[in-house]
Length: 345
Image (cartoon, rainbow, N blue to C red):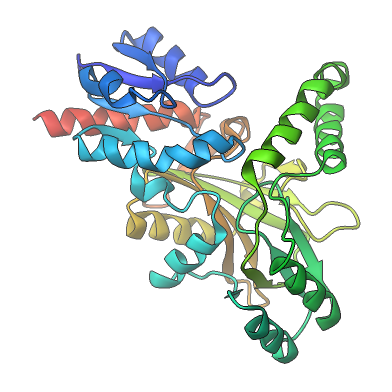
């Protein structure tokens, strides 16, 4: 494969490894700016586009899906493809997609009218989990223990709404917890002014989430969740312990790499969903129902690659176990290059 791939570079994103892989393997590439008004002209000399766009950047939230769809329409191979990312950071979109293909989604309810929401709350059994359609790492996720608490959230959802951006204290606590575990407290302290400025700007640009109320059934009895990340025909899996005194595992950073702790049905379901949705890569958050059947909480094409790389091995699509680590960014690029080669034959 001698034709050029285009990479949108954002430091700290998947693009770091993509660039390194291209340089190591002698693959022609060019850096492009997908936020440039002339991006389609920039792509005219390439056969593929790789862009790890971020849910936390309001500019990328605004334009990424449009650029990706346009790039695909022009004939380019793209990661993430439209099929892979159209539902990214949108739990409402994920609800309808997973229901449409019969995936085992935890029962999810979205109400678009306050009176309808209040009537639903009067009939519902609690506890329930309240979420916004946006947010990662358990941001904007609350356990609702009573109808009264649900009514208060619904009334706010149809009036002042909620900021989809983590508040200053929540973000600082998360950064502190991760930095303490990694022994990186000094650098976190140095980055606080910039982080606070970013949060302030994102709050202003992203506006408020309102006009809907999103509830999910609470599945009790889980002291951890299972994260399965599929890249092509590879499935990586680990578990995350629930935070002390909390009900959430996402964002805890308390990861356990023990293949014996993985319910293989989670891996089977993940491969099935990826196949049906024609996704290039997808991360799944699973909990287990009382009968130990896997239930999906949410999905995402983007994830922390270091956590995936630390897996001691992965399953292939036939559920054979293969030892050894691989960076998911490398696997993504390998698959894309193979797809380009096939299309040129």
